[in-house]
Amino acid sequence: MKKSASEKKSLLRQYDQVFLDQGFRSLAGVDEAGRGPLAGPVVASAVIVRDFSFSARIDDSKKMSAKDRIAAYDQILEKGLVGIGVVEPEGIDTLNIFQATMKAMQDAVGKLKEIPDCLLIDGPYTPELPHKRFAIVNGDALSFSIACASIVAKVTRDRMMEYYDEIYPEYGFKKHKGYGTKEHFEALRKNGPCRIHRRSFEPVKSLCDSSLRT
Image (cartoon, rainbow, N blue to C red; front, side, top):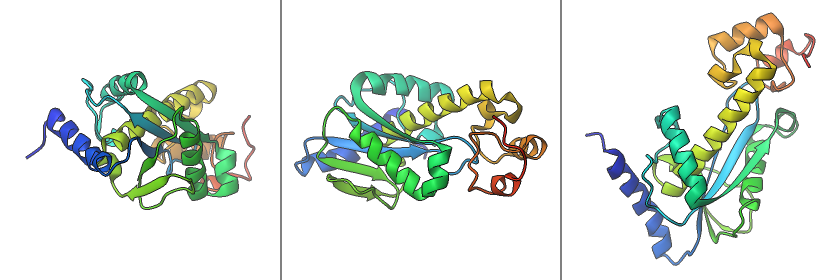
């Protein structure tokens, strides 16, 4: 049976409470958005939640509507401490997407105004940081703090891609956010890659002989 929004939030809170009951005073959830797209940055967010009494829906950002994500994003910024890390396409091409993601997470944690003593990180790997770290696969569907981080990362990156859509309207970034959709592939074949395409990703890599749009 599908859980209600309130039941889901309760389960997410209970997951984080297990860590608080172990004596950790300050938890930060960490997640990223944008590992897979052909264009745009990878964005990570770190969120410390003090007040779990959210009226907005909190869940894995991929399971939420854009409207629900924005409502949650606003409350997270109001009730939590947030750090954001961004690695642009040039950095992704230099480092590789895995290392770029780790760097974005490090930067996000470093930008928190409070030093957490425990990090709950979505996925099987954790970046090198001096904090106690837990790698949690599917953490954005399990932990309240990670779910909040997933929402902030997703909304932040979506807004960046909407901005880029105004600069490069021929690619449709507002719609697909840089992911490899049929529309995006067709725009790439027609126009070649632009400045925010990841030149280490296929099929962008094969198109780099084309003129780079600026």
